[in-house]
Length: 340
Ligand code: DAH
Image (cartoon, rainbow, N blue to C red; front, side, top):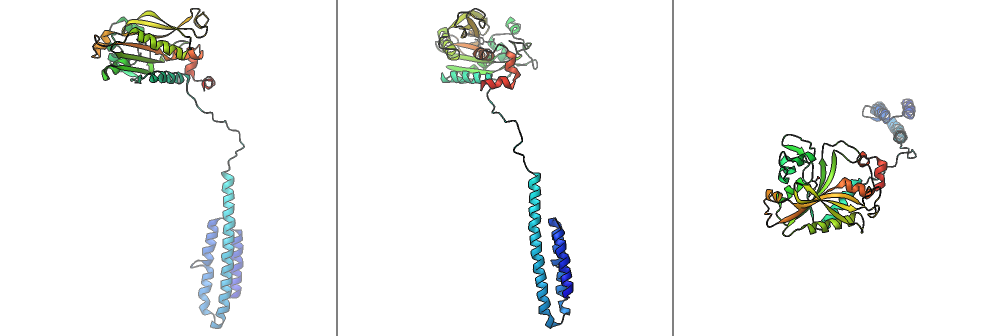
């Protein structure tokens, strides 16, 4: 019996020392110490031993069990450490490796200027109302005093979505939506994207941006328009900037003007930027046409208003001295980085 126990213990200790996974170790533990394990079987056979020898043999079995349990626990610790080492090794991250540093994003130049324009007009209590990009013929043309067959439709090559729907060719559509919703006094701007079937080149793009402005109240005159645009030009170009009104034509305003700002590059003396004229065209504007007010159920004998439409891309190009519209749309990161 004693010999059996010793042999069993030695072989099992050798097996324990040789095993290298937790599962193997568990099999060994069950095989020797489990309910039907070899050592357990030996204990059960104690009944065949003469009673006076039992305490002695019992002691030997207990010592063997303790040795085996200790060996299993030690091996278990070693295996766990090995497994941890293996995992750490396989999941190791080489922090010395060269990776591109992520650079912080920034606003696009058009967004920067748009935000400045919005801030400027908001500070003068204009509300901001962006209309939809897909419009109906009514809002984009009809209600703006541009009926079907009106030659002014030719000025804007429009993308039609269906017979009834089109991609708005001007943010002026926002004026009508506003005047339908709210009765005077009205002070609003409507910034957004507009679309025209234009070939892309240095000065054109089929998608560009405008900011529409509209003020309607009792007693609004051209002087109010001049005042606000002067302030705008001084704020966006420089303190000494002047504006001038040139007579023009838009179906939705009467009278209509094109507005120039004195060239901020040369101060009005004439240079390459202003093509020697000293002036740069910045927007179209005028007094809201009586027909447009009537279309929105506003009595033109009581209320008058002014409207203007700024080309955001144009203003951005002037302010940053960009001479090719394409660079604004190409989104080359080296170009965009200069603005942030
Ligand atoms: N909608 C015009 C355009 O796209 C710009 C414009 C001119 C808007 C005069 C106005 C305005 O509100 O009064 O060319």
